[in-house]
Image (cartoon, rainbow, N blue to C red; front, side, top):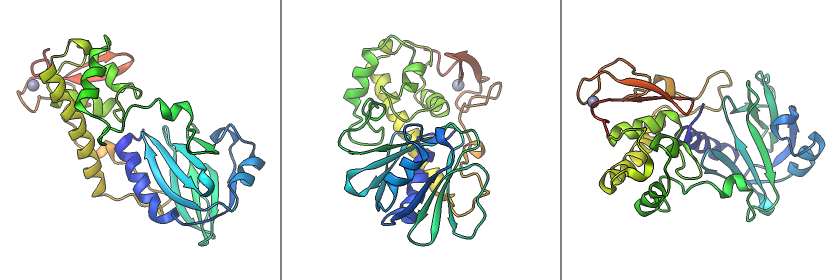
Length: 275
Ligand SMILES: [Zn+2]
């Protein structure tokens, strides 16, 4: 599943391809991808709109459209965009097709069908799923002060709190365990019991992990014109603790432990992350 750094790369890859392009026609082939609109309404409401930019909020991709409209896309498990010429064959699971005014098509493919699109009529009144998200983790809005307050207010485990996108944005399971390892704090510790110095360490670890992931991704460059390639590389990345159960800790050599917590695998070093 793509996490925030991967979605950021999709946005960067989309920008040069769609910015300034006019949508000549939009075809919704799978109703559940945009459940709020009928196929006819989807086509009618997007037809002839120019895409003025592409942004991101959390893992939502935001296509900014003329007249203040917004098309949001969440990739979920397997959603991805490909850019094709008009005569290339559509890849499998092509659930949405945008015909652009440069004789190319932007295609949304999604094997597992969990990806979602939503058309928002006025970008100034965003739906709750966007307004309740925590501040962007790499922006100035995500401050130490905010993070310390958020931790102090919660008795949940650090691991669970870090996964709650309304509290801390951008960490999925992989990046959460990596950040906790980097800060050397125990994932199961109640959030409100973490000391301030260690909370500050965790704050910086979160940013470091996300920035590293974005930087690592920029060396591979997502190619939207190759419909067959999977564009995420998370499985090839090297992780400090994630999926390293039984292997030696990079700091101290102790074997990495795995526990299932809140239904998810959590990896940590029982020595470095004792408390
Ligand atoms: Zn260790």
